Amino acid sequence: VLKRWLSSGGVLASKIPATPYPDERYQTKMMWWDSRTFANHADAGQLSRYFAEAQRIGPHPRADGFDTHTRTAAGG
Image (tube, rainbow, N blue to C red; front, top):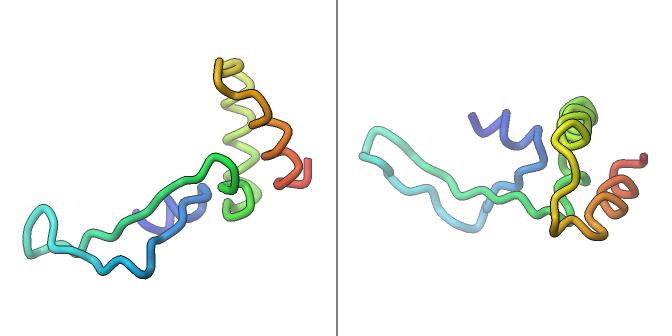
């Protein structure tokens, strides 16, 4: 699942070691999505789908400046 999340702009916290969660069979790694920079890390196709879905959903009340920044970062 890490590849899928990385393709959508997630960033792997490489300095935080993996932990056996929920049990020893797993090595869970920390990731995050920064709304100001995710477009710099996302695959172009994934980013395009993100913007198409966001447009269908409509504006978020706290999205002031978000669209301008991410479109610029995405080259759009």
